[in-house]
Image 1 (cartoon, rainbow over the protein chains, first blue to last red):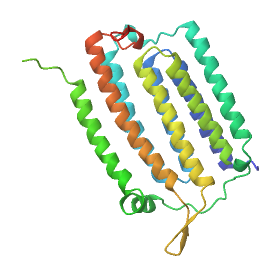
Image 2: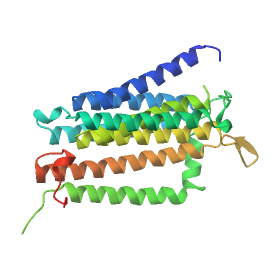
Image 3: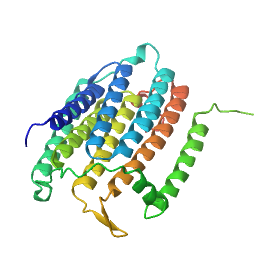
Image 4: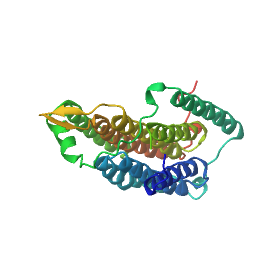
Amino acid sequence: MEFTLKTFIFYGFALITIASALAVVTVRNIVHAAFALMVTLFGVAGLYVFLQADFLAATQVIVYVGGILVLILFGVMMTSGRLEMRIHIERGQLLLGGGISLALLMLLLTVIANTPKWENLTDDGTAFEPTTKRIGELILNEKFLLPFEVASVLLLVALIGAALISRKEVRD
Amino acid sequence: MSLQHYLVISAILFTLGIFAVLTRKNAISILMGIELILNSCNLNFAAFSRFVVPPENVDGLIIPNIDGQVIAIFGIVLAAAEAAVFLAIILAIYREFGSIRPDEVDTLKG
């Protein structure tokens, strides 16, 4: 593979994503972890751009960085006093969890490396086309209409459920 | 960039998420691990849809198949709903127990 500017930027995004994800799971201060998560989400959005998924990248930035991350930060502010900002980790659990995760990673990498069907599938470099129109057709007119409606009901249920669970209980 | 580049990145993200879920003692850190897992899953959907699925023929036009991207968008919707309910439960637990360490919330433990 020739080393062009594009591959350079791709590896940059990959490095940013993985390094900040590592920071999310290792940093002791939970607010720092939340901001590292933001960098990870931006990195994944960049990788979506490389996959020619422009709408998906924009949705990732808007929903994850603009919505879920703010929600997480609110959760941190409302539940953590000064003492609980630091995350406690037990040594035995760290070793066990690390061993299990490492074994899982080895398993996944072995599968990825040894599946012949996935080899030599390189980017054919087709022209960048806006995917928004096609996604709109698929969601509102074609095979994803039912999942779209189900997702809207799910969001309504989650909205009502979250409001119901988190409100203060009124006894009368 | 081949498919395997994306799969390796996704596998690393997934493993880090599992690691966070297994070792962290704070419910919000566990939520962050779950978000990492969901992100790796969505990245896989988008990558497979780009590299593996053949283009489709719509009204005589050959266009790339982006079903995987649509499924990834549904994944983002699920993640948003999950985060909202998760944080609502965390708030309720914090009000009840004064802590969000999962091992301190053990009322149902025999």
